[in-house]
Structures are given as C-alpha cells and as structure tokens.
Length: 111
Length: 246
Image (cartoon, rainbow over all chains, first blue to last red; front, top):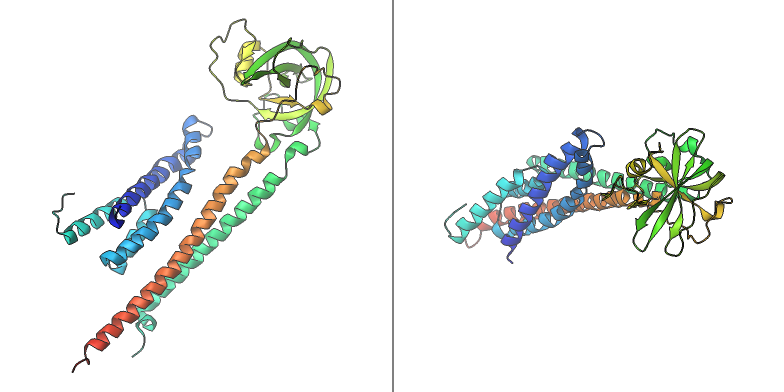
C-alpha cells in the first residue's frame, strides 16, 4: 500500500469518525432527553472519540510524510493536519490531495 | 544577513507553536489528572464500607444512584414467602423478598443455586446485610403473566409484573457472612456484577486522551524544528546560487 493510499484511507476514516462523534454522538449526548435511549446511545457512542484520537495520530504522521514526499506548502500541510479536528473539512482536503496527486502522476482527474 | 527564523515575519509562527504546545501540554496534564482521580475513586471500593440502613441509601420510590452502587446495606423487615428463580448460565439466583417498614419490598438474592431440591423461601422477621445492586436489563420474558416462577434476570420491572408487589428500584445480594440467621443451606454466595470498580473504563479514556495530547504537543515541536530547518536551508540555497561559478 502506497503512502498516498494509506493517506486516503486514514483521511476518510478520521473524517467519518469525527463527523459521527461531533455531529451525531455529541448532540445526542447533550441535547437528547436525559435517560432516553437516544441519549444513552450518544453517551455510549462517545467512546468513538478515543478511536478518532488515536487514528488521528496515525493520520498526522502519514499526512506529514506524504506532505514531504509530494512537496506540499507549509500552509497546505498545516491545513491537512488541522483538518482532522474540524468536522467535514478533511473530506475537502482529501479531494484536493487526490486531485494534486493525480495531476502529478499525469492521470486524468476523475473525482 | 540574519537567519530567516529570527525575522519578524517568523515570530507569528513561533508564537503559534508556543501556544499550541502549551495548550496541548496543559490538556494532556488535565486528562492525566482526571485519570488519576478516577483511579483514586475506584480504589475506594464501597463493597467493603460499613453497612448503612437501606432507607438511608435509597428510598422506596427513588432511582438508584451511582454513589450507593455496591454499598453494603442493612435490610430489616419481614420475608414475604415469595420466591423467584432468576435463571443464569449454569444455575439460578434465588430471589426472595423482604417487606420493610416503608411498605415496599426489596428483592434479595439469597444465593446461587445449581441443582438439587430448591430451598424453600424463608419466613419471619429478618435483619440482613447485603450489597445494593441496580436493576438488571429487562430481558424479554416469553411468559410474563404465566404461573412460572422463573425470570431471566433481576429486572425490577419484570419482577413487579411477575409478583404484583411494590418494589424498590434495586435489589440486594445477600452477604452470607452477615446473613444473620437467614437459611442459606444448599446455596452459594452470589457474586456482584455491578461494583464501583466497574468505573475504570472512563478513567482509561482519560489516559488515552492524555497520551494523545502529549503526542500532539511533541509533534508540534517536531514540525516547528522541520520548518526552521527548511527556512534556513532555503535561504542558504538562494545565497549560494548567486555567487557560485561567477
């Protein structure tokens, strides 16, 4: 598995986990009626934050290695790293990275 | 010419790194503190605390709260001559009922029973000590109104439906060492499923977060050093490019 593929998989996993935690689990935990099954679900699902955090650590390392290999600017590198903490931003970053990568490889941009 | 990492336009970056490292370091420290606090709380195992009267731990109509979970309580009252088997893998818990002065009854798991003649329900007045436990999850009962005296767990709603008795919101697991005359012949001590030490998982979560934050603090420092090297090398490259082979 190339660094690029590893990056894409991690970006999507981190993005999905972050979106789930912040847009589903968090509102349910704090906004749903106390003691209701939805609220309990939100509370139990909050354990996914730990999964997100640890995957994000791996993502940070892989994204950094890729940034050196692909010669990203410091600005874009910073955005790509921070994107794992801002809901939904990572999907945009992943698209940009893929476009750049395909362009560099001389492949037509399909996504 | 001065190094580019000392130029005024680089100060913003330095400040940003400083803030990021301070914030991540502090958050990590805070999470480790929370983890430590959880461990201290778990170490105070309430199951060995001295018993308090049942009505001081929980009222007949109160919900069960976490601070009395697993706590030994003194139950005084009268046996109701009513017995339910709570089926469990490999045997059953014998559940009997003590009606207290409050008028409500508390289910008492008298012990673990795995064959032979089922002991009869106890009768008469009683003073016993046992550990307070929350109602277990309601398991689908195939025969809720039937004559069978079996249930599949100590679920209070289930028991209320089965017995028609007004019950507390939890139950008690009898401590055989402090059964005070309650007949436990043919029964073994039932083990607690819910005790305060079950709370180590949220503590572990804090530990995981703490490690993460310190990793990010370290990574920010690493990025910062890389960036300074890049800047210095870039400048050296541009300076070299002009005079070489002139």
